Image (cartoon, rainbow, N blue to C red; front, top):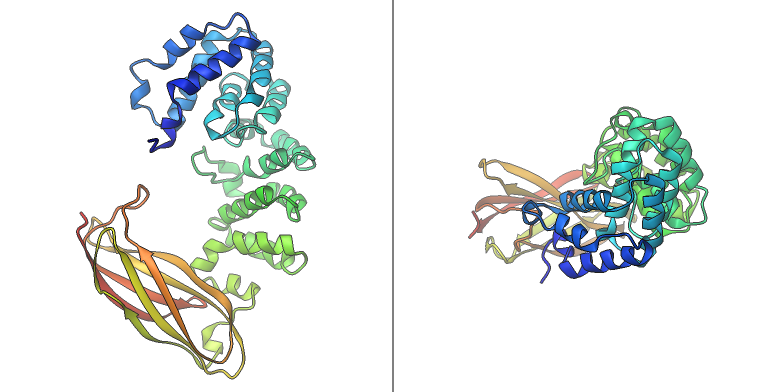
Length: 365
């Protein structure tokens, strides 16, 4: 059973790719291609390393003429869809930095079948002005894959990718592209715009807050983007972000409380769930918009506690008392390591902690 992304690269997949390229290019040496891949380094390589490894193998066996090689790959690429095929655009990154027009045409093809969001970034770093003009043109495309690339390719802190230092320092040159896409009918594109803005909010929250204030309430598709773009600021309890959605500071409200916070079992083991409940009390006499999060202070290897916040509830609460019940899994996952010891649960309403309780995790490291 496949467990990691790198395991997508089965022998069968690579043979299929080789066979298809061989149908397009009669001179393709399939045996040498597979031999170049399955060398002593292959088994130790992670996903992105394997992507580059395959691109380098293609470089060895395709024609030395870059335009000719790219033509072969653009004919083969439509038969392969999925993130595992990003070695097609990676070939462009590896070989085509000095042949801009040919490379842009190729990336426009490849992104439709996998994604060129990683491969465009060295081009952005080399000539940001030229690439932003290209992204602006792609933002006008009828193809949602190109419109998404216009945003995703210039995200300043795209995961798994090289960062874009210039756009981290000053994200404003990218904003006209996001402005063009703020009402995009494709959820695929809107998610990218929201993630792009969330990236910016980590370095320039004031830029995103100003933009969100101007955008919010104008179009339902844009409102979706704004809410997701501000998720990091909302999780932090940034009162400026909360105010955009009508959440008041609790200091301005009298009668909002969290009562009877209970943890079903204050001693749990790794693999189990933390089950808890509490009462939200609204004694203001009027319905109130409340964003309720819960935060867990996880024990770390150093013996210190590190917080992580989760969304719990986001709605208007009528006057009265309301029971909220939640579960948080402590099953082992690859992205989080657990440590035994004291942990702490907090209930946060409109950015303010209103109740806390300790629990103990056992059976971890």
